[in-house]
Amino acid sequence: MLEQQIAEGQAAFSASLGAMDELLTVSRSQELSTRPREISAICQIFSLSSQSCKRVPEYLGRLATIKERMTVKVYEIKNTTLHCDSLFAIGILDLCNVHADTAAEVYRNDICNALMPSKQHMSHTLQGTHGARYLSHARALFKFGDRRDASACHPTFYKTRLTSKRDDNYVLLDLNHARHWGVMAAVPSYDIPWGSKSARVVWRGVSTGKCSATAVNSRMMLCDRWFRSSDARIDVGMTSIVQGCGEAKKFVKPGMSMKGMLQSKYILVVNGNDKASGLNWALLSNSVPFMVEPDVESWLLESNLKAWVHYIPVKPDFSDLSSQVDWAVENDSEAERIAKAGKEYVRQFGSATAEAIVQAAVLTAYLDRVNVKTGGLKGHLEGECSEE
Image 1: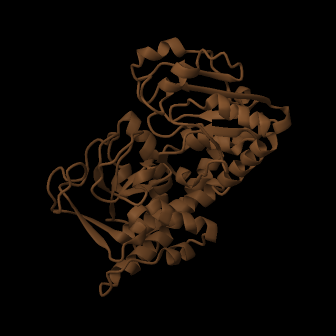
Image 2: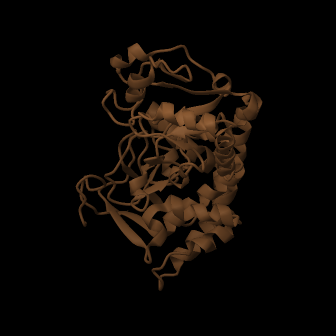
């Protein structure tokens, strides 16, 4: 099922390449105008619904509101091995030709599997009778990885961004798709009705994030406070130790499958390195998420989630977890209403085909607004930013 969905999304994205190249070539040939295409016009070309089109500027960050195209000068165009946690400039079509280490491969494959399903198909899609024009030399900035980044000097594609940087240089794509969306199709077969679930809150996860029980809104803080709780309704624990967090060993419990977790009405969602991979399926289920107000967002646009509307909020130190369970038990119908609203929210992220076309629109808007060229200073892409 997942493989079929991914293939459908890739086919939809590939089919959009011709329209993307046509739009960008015409737009860039209008040298008398420095104004980028209106996002609404891009949405129209890709036949996006009004609901899907509304998300395009939300992914674009500050690029959504610029009035003139911008030029970004970089020191070099990447032609060596791609790594995570390193910001780089690269040609869109070259992204798939250079070597990538194992971690970076996961991220770039979501783009390349759509851009270049085969060399022959790419040639046919882009060249047609007119030849590949703008896309053949278009460039963009990328940074792969699961990190909370706040140092980009120019508009750059990321998997996640801090919600405080929503209107900044962080442009979102649906990267590492299988990890965050791959299990969604299994939820209906594992889930049970609200009335058949137990009134308890469960969490399982690995020891990603800050390895300190004093770090606010961390998995370690959650387990330090509630792992040995006398409240039988609270069941939290680590399933494995990663990233050298030996302190988490004392919080290890037997694993729990999605099917097992969905026996409970309340699913606790806790971020690790960036976002919690279980949030997407928890929202889609008949259970209600318990979570701290999001400070990181992804393709899911978590900053649009509202406390008491889409999830039951808990404090960043998890001190009110038991009292929030009390509220949910005492207000069962309200808790169920929140669960239904969360499910309705995540349903807007439609089929793999529809989401691939939204991504094509985001990429097109970026390339129409940003011209990446050489001639810049070395090391000015993030951190201490230069005006050069």
